[in-house]
Length: 393
Ligand code: LMR
Figure 1 (cartoon, rainbow, N blue to C red):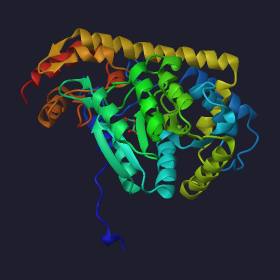
Figure 2 (cartoon, protein in one colour):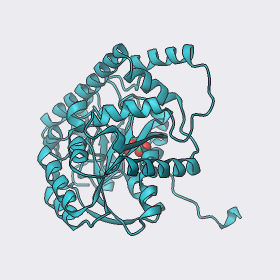
Figure 3 (cartoon, helix red, strand yellow):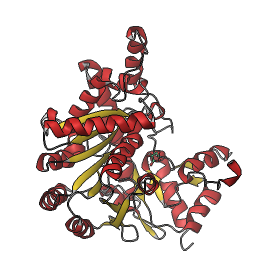
C-alpha cells in the first residue's frame, strides 16, 4: 500500500529550523519560524505561565476527559479577552482547539461540509497553512492582492473590491492583527468599510487572531474584529494563545462562531463539536488550563499583560531600528516601522535569500518573510549590511 503514496515535500518553514540548527556559525541569525525571541535569542516561558503551571500541578485532581469543547472556563475567558462583550454571549459558540491551526481547521471544515458552494476570499500573500487547509478540504478559493511586496504597500482597493464581489454566504478571511507574513494591518477605517460591505452582501468574515497583543496592545489589536462582529450577524474567529502566552508547543487556541441568535449559536456549536470529535476528539488540556488560570486571577493577569506588553514594545523597537537603516541595497526598510507584529516580507529574490543564508548565516522563509523578533537590536545594522551585500542577486 505505502508504495502507492507520493512523497510530500517537508514544510519549508519547519525545515528552516533544522538548517539553522545545523549551521555552526555563532553569528547566525534566525528570522524563520514565528516564535518570539528576546534580545538574547531565547524564547523563555512567561513568569505568569510558570506560576500558573505550579498552581495547576498543586490543584489539578483529575485528568479525566473534558469533552470536545475542551476547558469551558478557558473558552469563556478567551472569548472575553478577544471580544470584550462586542456581542451577547448567547450568540457565541466557542470551542477550545489545538492551537490557532486547529481553530482554522474547524472553522473551514464547518463551512466546506455544510456550504460547499461558499467561496473563501483570501488576500495574498498569506500564511501558507491557510491555503493548504483550504485546498486540502477542497474549498473554493478566490485570491486578491493584500500587499504588494515590491512596493511594500497594502492594497486596500483590491481588498475592498474583493469584498464587494463576495456573495451571500461566502467567507472573507482577514488577519485580525499582525498580518502574517507582511505586518500590513487594516486601519480602523478599512475595518469599518469591509464590515459595511460584508453587511450589505451577506458574506461572513473569518478572522484569524493569532498575535493578539503583539501589534499595538490587547485593545487596539482586537478593535477591528470587535467592530466587525458588532456590525454583522455572523462571523467566525480563530484564536491562538500560542504566541501571546508563549505556549507554542502546548497547542492552545479556540474557535468562535458568532451566530445571529442563541438558537443558531447552539447549532453551530454542536456542529463544531462533532467535527472536533472526528478530528482530534478532544484538545490537549495543559496550555488552556494555564491560560484560564492566568486570565481569571487578577494578579497573574496583570503579570502576564506586563510581560506581553514588554514583548510588544521590543518588537516596536526593532521595527524602529530597522526602519532607521533606510535603504539596504535594493530593499527599503523604512516601511517596517509602520507595519505591526512579528513579520515583514521583503522584496528579495530566491538567489538573494540563499546568499543571505550561505554568506551571512541569515535564515528567513523562501518568501522573503522575516521574523522581526529574531533580530537583537545590535544585529540590525549587520542585517542591513548583509541585505546590501546581496544587492542585485
Ligand atoms: C509562523 O507562521 O511561523 C507560525 O505561525 C508558525 C507556524 O506554524 O507556521
